[in-house]
Image 1 (cartoon, rainbow, N blue to C red):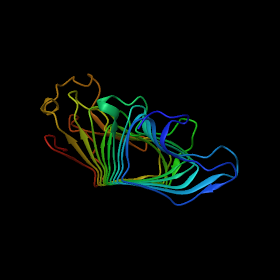
Image 2: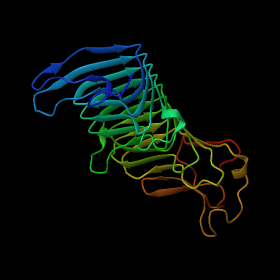
Image 3: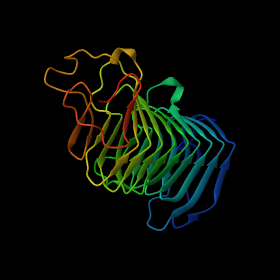
Length: 277
């Protein structure tokens, strides 16, 4: 329960040089007042590796980083609460599985980084809650994450994805910033059955921004919560602009403000106070 020697982690799963760590199970652990929470890392040589770390029913509060997975064949986290000041989870060259977890800023502060930071990682995140300024950060130099699965989560911040042949399904996104969901790199993805809920006071322009081709986008729902956006002024978004709901493969789909509005693609809906003509 106090700062230790480097790496100053509550629990550090780290093999000696040339060795392997296997079958690490961490259950019912409470972490407080530690610089780092629970981490799995290797010493940097080409031989050392971690086959699997399993974290269940833990409560982690860290001054900097909640969880860290580096060179882990499997880093599995279930029913665990993570609060951190810098980032909830950072991972490099690993397979990360999250189920029924809650990630939030430490002591009500704003995260200095993103909730999840990935370098060449396969992520499977389900049935969890994420609070912060930005859901996932793939550093700009990295390729799109392959086969990512993000399903049935509640996400309280904008989402920007680099994803190849992945699935973003059944999630609810709440934010006063737009776009709520962006796909900026990768193709062959399925983005479906999500609910994008705008909570800001200004009239939203773009809620879903798909910047690449070859993706399946269907059965998504768009909601506006504040009453202030139910009746926008004629020039609220500029005298010569219509209200773009989202960009799909380079083509703009518009809201009913324009009398010549294009319809949304089949299966994508706007509900609440606004109607699509």
